[in-house]
Image (cartoon, rainbow, N blue to C red):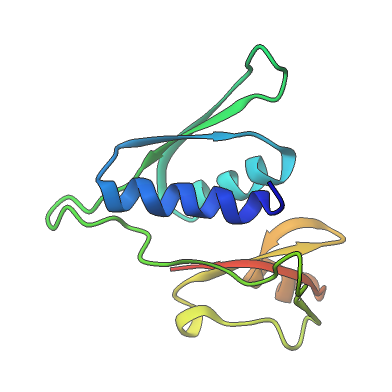
Length: 132
């Protein structure tokens, strides 16, 4: 697999389209941090990190759906920086997703944080993905 972040986002998109309640994803430190950010911002219902026999571990994510319309809360998961074309931005040019209604996940020297936190800290970095 050449792009594990893209695989992570695609598994969540596919599970939502199929109407699944849970999705299992192979774990890494970066994927765990992205999962924590999605949970903190209210895009997923809950998550759990589990160890497996091969010591890689797995992330189990409960997908969040709207109570009335039964539509997934996440409308769009979009990979921005790819292995073939990395996208770096300074703190002044960080993207605003839907005028601040969505989030961009940024990998910075301060860790993996949202675009709003990066602006507050005054740091730029690699724009991993956009979520709304």
